[in-house]
Image 1: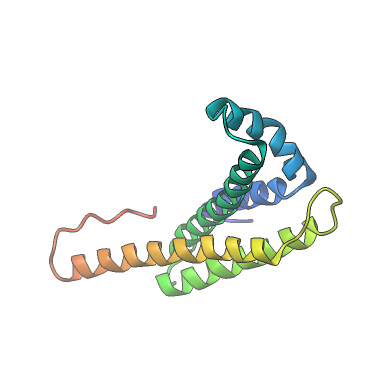
Image 2: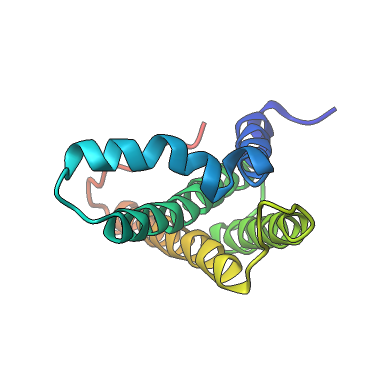
Length: 156
């Protein structure tokens, strides 16, 4: 049986893969996002609104993989004897595998396109978050070892 600490990362991973389906193709998200952008910027030309929509989609890639990496990192750090460094590498590996599977799957869907650029954006989101998470954890460890009173988030 899978330990409960992996429930949230697995659910988020399923969500990430679901968002990679045809339901979230550019045309589908544009039906909602473009009218909202038009309402926010009524004088903006359609080409500019489409460009903002594209940027929002890429930021979503970055954010969803940053969250995925953080969730896996936190879950993996709870394993006895596992160092934060090991947890970060494992979390990054999971994220890269997920991004590869997602982009490969998208390349088989007519309304989607698998993209090496999107894979790099996904990897950047995951790696960036892991650098921050490990840095915070290491700073907390140094503060407590030095006798300081650094508040460290509990992973329990």
